[in-house]
Structure formats: structure tokens, C-alpha cells
Amino acid sequence: MGTTQQQHHATITRRAFASGLATIAIGLGITGCSSNTDGGSNAGSGMNSSSEGAEPTTVRIGALKGPTGMGLVGLMDAAGMFAAGDAAATDDGSSGDAVATDTPVGADPAGIGALENDYEFTLAGSADELAPQLIQGDLDVLCVPANLAATLYQKTEGAVMVLCVNTLGVLDIVEAGDTLHDITDLAGRTIYSAGRGSTPQYALEYLLRENGIDPETDVTIQWASEHAECLAALQADPSIVCMLPQPFATSALAKVEGARIALDLTEVWDETVAANGGNSQLITGAAVARSAFASEHPAAVEELLDAYAASVGFVNDNPSAAAQLIEAADIVTAQVAEQAIPYCNIVCMTGAEMAGALTGYLQTLYDADPASVGGAMPGDDFYYGA
Image 1 (cartoon, rainbow, N blue to C red):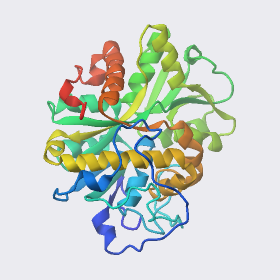
Image 2 (tube, rainbow, N blue to C red):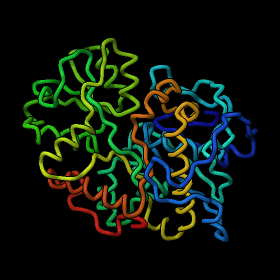
Image 3 (tube, helix red, strand yellow):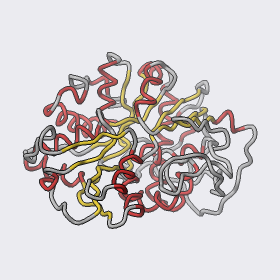
Image 4 (cartoon, rainbow, N blue to C red):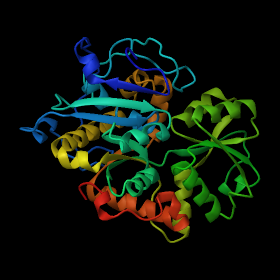
């Protein structure tokens, strides 16, 4: 992007852009999102009224280059993050060096309107790059794998709370062939995946064990640092399989001959949990905040959740327009994003609904391996607004 740091992550700062950006009108014909979006948020609309009378503050948000970042792009645009010629994603659908794009931006297609607060965004390929910044106070809000949200709560002794669930199940098993039709077919195979120590690892291990496969002895799991490494491994050796989240699973279909989504792990999760008499759903991501920030700036948190809900509604309802912003944010290409959005399960689930869904998911992980959620289930103070 224009002033993006092309290192391990990119920081996009509204203040750095605002004085020099020209707003580019676009005729997308998109109306503003209502508070009752498909994302399942119970946060209302009307961002301006929520923070009326409060001192403006800067909200520093971290997110991953995947569905969590994709759901934020409407808010990022409303906050003045983009300019014509911002960086686009590389043509393999992954992030890379900045290149120019003519993506039309600046017209607030999510219908968020004027924001009372300032916003800074940091995007990275891995939660490991951003979690220390939240703990150290350099970020106020961070979108992380759902189990990591609980782990951070334990690690900080309650200094982190969850604001919303932002992504449901997005994990797929991808193969170049037609050999996998049931999760039991994974026995004896080599599986490449990123996300060790977070939702991908614990979800996969839970599903394998519950279906009679020992993840230590019956399969070989190769953990990569980023999803692009998994894609490269599949290109080099079609005999392996990959566990990839959307939108990277969609990207793999275009880049690897004969690739197909063999297993939707959200469906496998639902079937497995039901067979065990449970009632949890697979949750991939959540947005957490420093508890001190939420306590000191309640109006800013309210505005953020309202704007987040509108952004999620825009992305889900307008994948073509949202894809242009996703490319401008250097997450994936617009082509991949548009195809993947319907499968990304991007939501903004808050309050009691969030607490119920996340508690059920974390309990399932805890019962399988307490370490997966930090050694203990989080307390009631973990759930903002519940």
C-alpha cells in the first residue's frame, strides 16, 4: 500500500493517509447495512450516536490476512485506509510485495458513515506476530483464532476479553485427486497445514481422535508457518493433502491441477459433535480487546462493534465490491476473494449469542485437551456485553 511496511506485517494508519487522500467516488449503488446482518450481530446501527459526547480515541486493530481481515475491509475503507493505487495481492492469492491497483475506494460502500474515532490497522500472516503487541499494549483489539482468545485471557490473568466471534468454520481438506471421501480416509496420509497451536491444530486433532485416528501415529502432520507454504507443497507433491482455510482453499483450486475440496471440516465437526451427543459449532476466529481499553473507552468499543457489523454485512451481501477492497488490503486477489466469500462464514456475533456459541466450542476443545484453551475455561468476565 502507499505507506505500508512490506515486512512481516503491514500497518495501515488513518492519520498517515487522511491529510493526503482524495476521496474517489464510485457508483457501486450499495445501500448501508442494517444492524440485523447475516453475520448474526446484535450490535445496532448508528455509529455516531454511540460515542456522542465522548472524547475521540485511536483504536488500534490487528487482524490476519484471511477471513478476519476480509470482514474488516468495509470499516477500513470508511476509516480512510485506502487510496487508488494501494497494494494488491499477488496473483497466487497470497500476500506479497506491493503492486499498484486501480481498485475504486473511498465511497464507504458499507454505509458506515462518519466515525467519531480514529482507526489504525495492522495486518499479518500469523497471530504469533500480533499477539505480543496486544499483551504489551501496542494494539487495543486483535482478531485471533478462537482458542487463542481463551489462551490470552489465561496468560494475561483476565486482562483480555472477547468482543465478538468473527469467523465460523472455514477449514477444508484439499487434495489433488479423488481419494478422500471421509475423514477416516486421512489415515496414513501426510497433511500440510499452518496454524500450529491454534484452532487448525486443535480442531484437526479433535476430529481425528473422535473418528478413530491417532494424530501422533496414524497420520503425518507437517506444520508450516503460512498457508502459502502448504499450497507450494501441494504443487510440488500431489500425493499430500492440505488443510487450508478459506480463501486459501479456493486459491488452491485455481493453482493446483486436479485440486478439489475433499472435506469441509465444518460439516465433519457438526457430524462428529452430533454423534457424540454434543451441540457445539466450529468457531475459527474472534476479536479480543484489552480489558482496560474496553473499560476506559466503552463508546469507542460500541462504535467499533456497530461499524464491524456493518462491514461484515457489506462483505457478505456484496462479494464483488468487497473483493476490490480485499485486494486493496493486500489479503488475496479480488478474483479469489469474490469466489471465497460465500464460504468464509464471516460473522459479527456479539453478546449472549457470542458467549453461548464460544463457550460451547471452547468446552469441546477443553474436554479434549485443556491446554488448547490455556488450561482452564475462561470466566464470565471474558465475554464483553454478555
